[in-house]
Length: 336
Image (tube, rainbow, N blue to C red; front, side, top):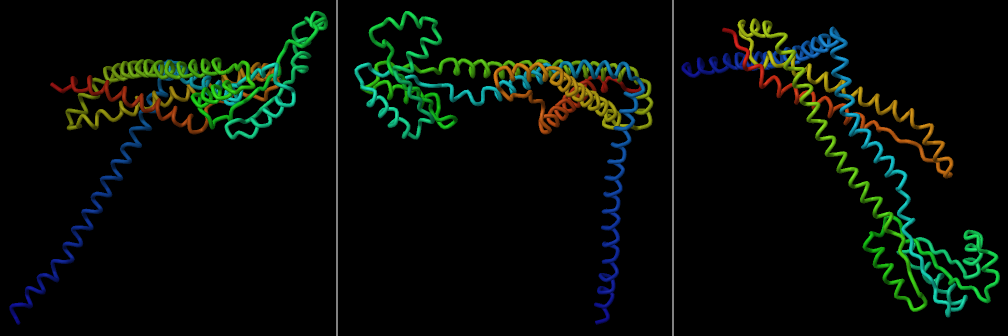
């Protein structure tokens, strides 16, 4: 029994030491993390102050980056507005059915009523032979000539508009072929080609915008990389001294990465300001033009999410450009 007591005492005595060691380990990790975050904040603020200490070169770099980013961003906004204008144009893809002249007026109206009951047709407009003649006389200017004709040469017309956003172009083609084969119909015309051409051009515009954005993003990387390279060369002596006292490449690299981040972020703000001012300048004439067409259309700019994405993307480009430049040039600077 006496031999067991010292062991129990030994175990009881070792437990507080372990708890104390674990507590010190947690405290040490917390202190390291706080120190790491504090150093990042200090370096970020110091990098920004260095840019403000040379306002003209920094402003010129921000303007170059902002203008480069404004070109694809402006095309993106223009395509978004064009898409908003054409959003309701799917209904303009209509089918004109010319009724055979031997079909009576009553049968033609019954056919129009039957088509209105279909779920894949949104609207049916019936134009009688007399209405067609009156419209032609009013629009063509040949009213006196048509008045001397013995009979009306124009057929009745049934204008069919497919359901919007619930029917594809292929389904519209199938509907057109089905209506065209009706025995009462002499001829059918599908007014869809111009809409398809418009959307094809918009898709081409989107792809051109992406290609331009990729090329100009590469240009932004080159601009920031060259700017960071010059900053490294101007602080060569400082870098050598810091490395002599034991600083690692990670420590030396950090200020230049934040410099690239600030360059990219500032360029994104310049880009946003450029787009906003341009839209404000164009909003008046666009509103007047829309009013002439009895439209309530207004120019749409970048939303909150799109603006944040623009700023984050530009800051990311700045960070990547700085990383590439620092990785290439910093390793060549070593104390002798």
